[in-house]
Length: 212
Image (cartoon, rainbow, N blue to C red; front, side, top):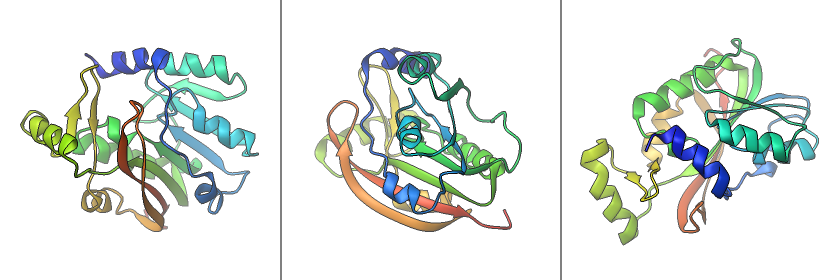
């Protein structure tokens, strides 16, 4: 199944559970900051920020059905279909949010391109917030990592029976991917997946180096 088709279908059936640490975010971002929520889905996190008093939030997602669901749920939000490369000017945002987005992008090169586009649209000293999935070490996950390693050429990538292709990450890989950012906060955690399993995860807050 085409991944865009999968997420269009998921808009009708899935409720996202990956947590957003508003307390972590708010320690580093003012309520007047211009914020871009990349892979916003149906606007769950954007609405949480809006309800907390953040004033300038724009959300993009490559699933049209997710955006339409968001318009129905939260008509006050700015949500639009879009993906990287972004149709935004250089240095136009104070903060970018990625909640369970890297897990949906399984190729190294595609993840690297996304991060570089985020670097482009962030202002010098801007911040990046991420919640996403880490590698797990239980039998169920190890078996599916091994099963799909040769198919996708990356350990940690796996396919769901319903059609999604997803990825869990090592901390070593993330350090390289996010090397343009000075780490402000990094916490590991365990949380529920959209299919009600549990997974290792992390919360990252990084500040763009001034000379990027």
